[in-house]
Image 1 (tube, one colour):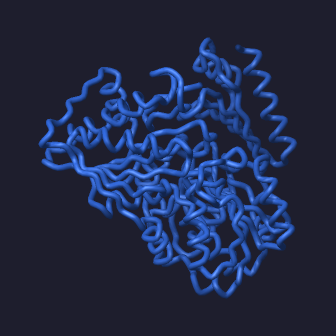
Image 2 (spheres, helix red, strand yellow):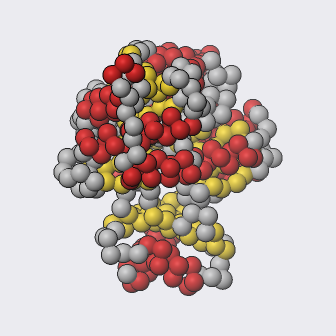
Image 3 (cartoon, rainbow, N blue to C red):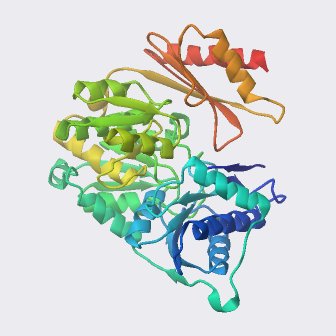
Length: 460
């Protein structure tokens, strides 16, 4: 059981002891710290916060604790209920709110939950802001309102529908071409809120949708991280139903994975690549992804005459660099699409709209489209950490051993070899070291990962 406090929020497993797990006490403390931070940032008499949650079992409990805590701080709460991360991000500016909290542990299993914190733009807080909130929580610096000054609470329904309408209004979402293509698509939403949002969007696009695990009851039928080894059911169903493709989203619907018509993975990395290829083909501009993302985005961007840059891992880091470089699309190689024409947040609904527009106009099958891109292969691995392991020491020793190679220390250690790379970093959300590699074949990528796993184990 684990509790992880970081600049991006608080994440942990439900139950157990205070300050060791995500207990009701920890949820209240962190919500209160965020509320106090908001009050420090604003001189307004009245503050508003939008909250929403995914469908995991503990969501209603945590949502109630968070909302009542904010009310106790004299902050008005707008609760949009079962929602998606990008829907809450859109709702914050639409409600002219001062911030937002998304109650979701993203791709983590059902025993986890988390509070993701937003600013008044509906964007994730930066490192400095997150540090201030952590210090408030650490020092129990809260001052609650007297009875006559308590905040208000209101529920607002229909925000997923508003989100879908905004996606359909995007200039590059070619509704006419998608309807003409008459796609048949399987959707695996891991029994969370994507089961509400994605089928509804597809219906508006004239797509025949077959639902798989789309009941938003929080009972995840498989590991919710949309990786190949977790997606055998949808792969088999796509083939059985002779569907054009499969769409997979994680519990909070900010990661998009695709399955080709033959049941093979389109590849999380290539979701962003395909969407960027489509956008760059219509609008000249630059792109950004993080250090753990495929080289393919760089290749595609340069093919269209644009410039590519890599940021540290983390949505806020990608967004910051996108703004600095005027990037017209960006994201993360885990299937996260950030399209500023909509908003600065990873959004699977936007990704679906852009990808289907590309596929419909290309006249290719999903598999043919995938084969049209440069062939790189990734291996994503991790090593579980124990408290006695010093990650910084490990990374320093790796960097020293490969000091003659092209090394980046923006986020952990990334070593670029001539035809392949490895990125080693400590996760912000789990007690693990992530080992990502990419090469010109799957075997080479796997072998490179195994080599560094053994080197790391030798060190500690």
